[in-house]
Amino acid sequence: MVLEVIFDGLNWIFGPIIALDPNPQNPLLTIFLISLIISFITTLANKLLVDQDEMESLQNEMKEFQKEMKEAQQSGDSKALAKAQSKQKDFMSKQSKMMKNSFKPLIVTFIPIILMFWWMAQSTVSNVIVSLPPFAYYVLLTPIWHMFYGPPSTTIPYAVGWLGWYILCTFAMTQTLRKFMGFKQGF
Image (cartoon, rainbow, N blue to C red; front, top):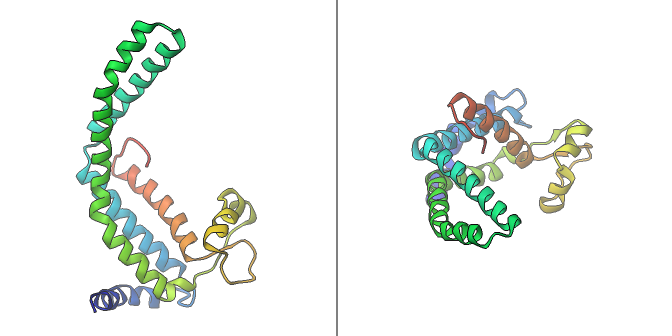
């Protein structure tokens, strides 16, 4: 009942977009727009819910600690190693804090994204077949992906289905949006 209402709502929202797609039987543009919307929502959630400066500071501290620990292990100096190990507990709590901060956007966006994926798998969007250039097909490790979720049911060479096209679009859109929103680091 609830899922039907959600499905109908998503059909109401994205049905006109699919109809406007230049090729409604193979709605590549619709998947691109959906990936843009989802990328924007997740990137915005990251921007609003995670203190980027604090994350960068914690990551830099962690890198310095790891460098110090490695040097102490390589030097064989037991005092330096004991000193580094005494700091390890403090850095474990900092690493835990980093993990908590990075999970905030996931908690907010997980259910809507799952519902969107469910809708895409049930709608005409799931019929998408994209033929990639051979070079891109192999560079993106598509044959390995096909081992897990199966190749699209087509005789078109170097083809990916809706999920592969969505993933490609999402990676590109997320990186672009992160640059526009002023993120200092990648994913």
